[in-house]
Image 1 (cartoon, rainbow, N blue to C red):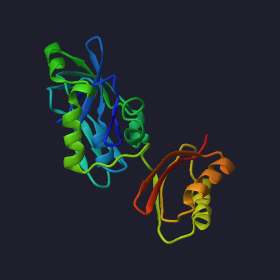
Image 2 (tube, rainbow, N blue to C red):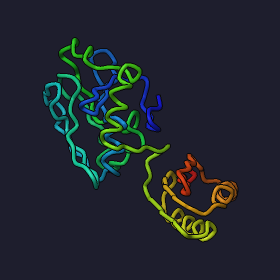
Image 3 (spheres, rainbow, N blue to C red):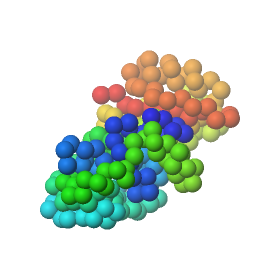
Length: 219
């Protein structure tokens, strides 16, 4: 589901105030952060977890996340015992930004109060509250979270693309770049660039005289 350009998974239940979600398999809830927190904090650079086996009440911390603009606790949407943590996040915190509903899950909790599931809502029922959070916190989402940003105002797109090629040449596959240009020829040049390089153009968004591009390195 798309709400104000932000994508929310349809197969999870949301704790809107806690900025978390839960996906249940029996009484075990896989828990992660929602899109609002994933975009509000900036690119995450560190995570910490409570130990497996720890008992947590609903609303209490499973761990913490930190980005350049925000530090926050990840609050459990259910009461129960932590049975697993996503150890991949320790080495790659930005999975929380790029893939918050799948590879970027945070922890698994064996729920001990089944009735608490009724306090959580699917995106379709939480839409209005999620919209309000996006507006309140001034969250702005694109097709994927950028690893790099290039604001190229007053520069010919051909010169910008040379710098983009240089950046991606030293970046791993899957790197995402947010490029902003005011060159009126940039949309045509970006299409030619993707044809030439095989890299992906995930989104083009025009805002006044500026055009925002989200590109992803192939591979």
